[in-house]
Each structure stands twice: as structure tokens, then as C-alpha cells.
Amino acid sequence: REHFVWVGRLDEEQKRPHLYLDLADSLPEEQFLLVGPGGQDDQYNERIEARAGSLSNVDYLGRVKPDAVHGYYRTAKALVNTSEYEGFPSTFIEAWRFRTPVLSLALDPRRYVDIEEASGFADGDFETLRELTAGFASDPDARNAAVESAFTYFEENLTLEKVANRYA
Image 1 (cartoon, rainbow, N blue to C red):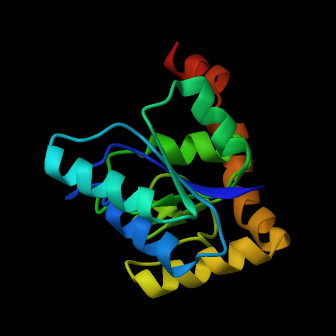
Image 2: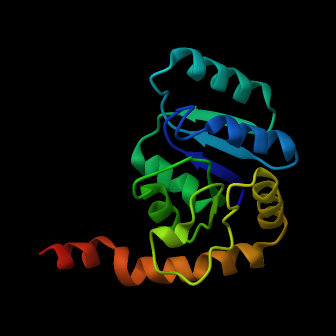
């Protein structure tokens, strides 16, 4: 696992990628990928792109094809979510599919899936998110333990075959 990854649209109110860049700035020894298209606010998009470019440990990749995103999940230490709100975050499912844990600032993964623990949930506190990220960076066993119940839930309930069978 090589980096942390953030996936979404550059939206200041909902997705809040500026908080991800704050996280990257606070952990300069770690690598961070920012993946996703610009949002509707061109000035905000430009500020995010410029700030990402100013941080030596951040790569802004913009919009990428879905298959390419899968590769970033596979090699990530964790998916970081900084959203204020979401419907059902498909990025969580995509991460769990590749046994990538989720670090979430404000959204409790247990809201969406029936898992016992959410060891990557910061309950809205940025400093907690920073501590969790630093911990996942330095402890692969903690990362693996954090994702196991979510991966099991994914395998039992959220694979394409399982969902299609229930739908049919």
C-alpha cells in the first residue's frame, strides 16, 4: 500500500477536498492522491488544483476512468472521505471491494452497512482523522483489521451477483 486516496467531485460544500489537502499538509511524509473532476465552482477548482500542486506529497489526477480508479484503491493505505453528507457513498463500496479501509471525517460507515466497528470514523473531528490516518500509515495490521468486517459484509451482501439476485 503506497498512498492515501480521495475520490470525488471538487465540491466545497459537500465533498470538501480542501480538508483532504489540510490532512496531506499535516502529514508530509505520506503520499496522497486526489482523484476526481472539478465541480461547478471554477474558482474553487482552481484553488484546489493550485494547492494540490503546491504540496510535494499530493498528486491531483483529475477525472480518471473507472478502471484506473480501481488501481488506486488497490494500492491505497485507505480511502479518505471528507464529505459533509452523502446518499450512499459508492466510494466506500469500491474501497471495501479491494480490501481498502475507509477513513471518514463525518460519515459513519455503520450508517450504510451492518458492521460492528468503524475504526476509521473520526466523528467530525479533524484531529481524530489526522491521528487515524497517521496510525493507518504506520500500522498495516491496524489497516487490515479495520477493513475486515466491511470486506466480509461486502462479499456477503454487495457484490454484483448478490445485488442482482436480490433485485431479480
